[in-house]
Image (cartoon, rainbow, N blue to C red; front, side, top):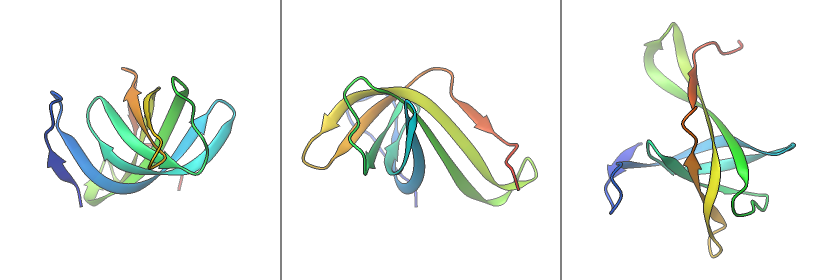
Length: 107
């Protein structure tokens, strides 16, 4: 379930638990998306992600109705780690402006 909430930020954030593929340079890991906004996301991963690292997140989300003829759509976000939360292992990622939504998923 996606739940919007506001903080001191200008963008609404949406709490959600979703698996994501996280790519850091030449390595990939599965991660968990904890919340997302139009400007960034909070994720946790099994690998250590350094501050200022460039990362790519990919996730497929299901839809109740077909969207572009598909029941799920892949979202691809690129960004930079802006904050690490040592206690939880979570990192805050600020998205680059060139994110895209892929409607052409392999079957």
